[in-house]
Length: 120
Image 1 (cartoon, rainbow, N blue to C red):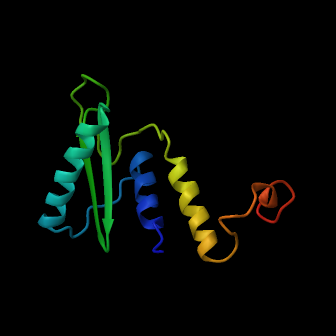
Image 2 (cartoon, helix red, strand yellow; image 1 turned 90 degrees about the vertical axis):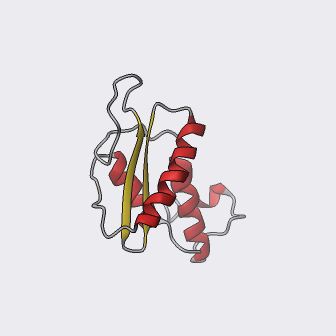
């Protein structure tokens, strides 16, 4: 499994206002992001959204909607956003990485890794 850490770090950077530079992105990548971002934003029902895409050495940050409903300010890589349910993504990625490394098994009971275990 290919790690998602570069993407996760870029998302966090965008969410906490530390914008990654847009480096050498191709117009085709920008267009693909725009089309997919528009669809995701429309389907989300949120007043605003920031999408960060990392592909190789290219990083693109794109904002959609408004930072607050009705204020007319488009969000960007410096906008502060609520994290919502993103912790599930981080937890799943970390568990998958540990399982790939053989440090845990997906069938392990949680009590094996609770208080007093080597992971806590």
